[in-house]
Length: 223
Image (cartoon, rainbow, N blue to C red; front, side, top):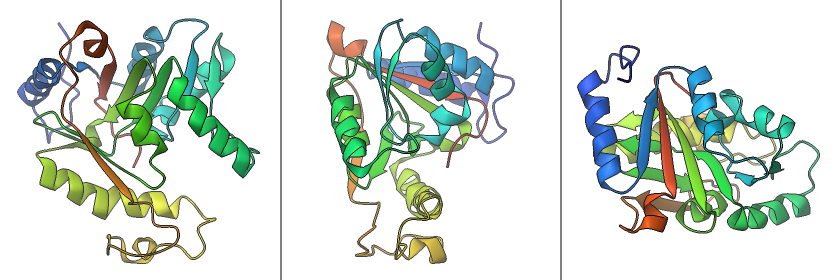
């Protein structure tokens, strides 16, 4: 029996159990782990040796140590954001991620009724989550769980987007949310809220039921 005792007080054990059952009912595999260390083990157990693994920019994935494990292990890691990559290399690797065996990424929000809600600037991350890689592994810290779609969009506009803008110092000029701390539906050349995607379920067939996997972690992760 999975230990749910370390779930943050905002969500009870019964909430997490119900969410996992909802996701599974939507043909999305889901599991709960209590710590980042357990999350690392859960993610790596789903990636076969020799796999080509695409990385969708995610601090959650980075924080639990998956990138380091992929760099050291018998895998081919496609990391568009590796330090030293040129703009051309960044774009090329983003495209190559669409044909990867596995995509590892995070989510901006996960609703308690089983919706994955994400906003992208270019759309490469959400595009690969939707179609392309044979398997998609999504890491979601407990801070990403929200009651419903309205709360998910509010979290993105008031928490995730401003924080993500601030971690990119090359944005010049930075979008207004870097100052305001909230989305103002700007027209900035560096606007990162251009594509909004809501994933509700996968097809009910053998291939797609095995495609998307969510690891919910009983710790805050990412932004």
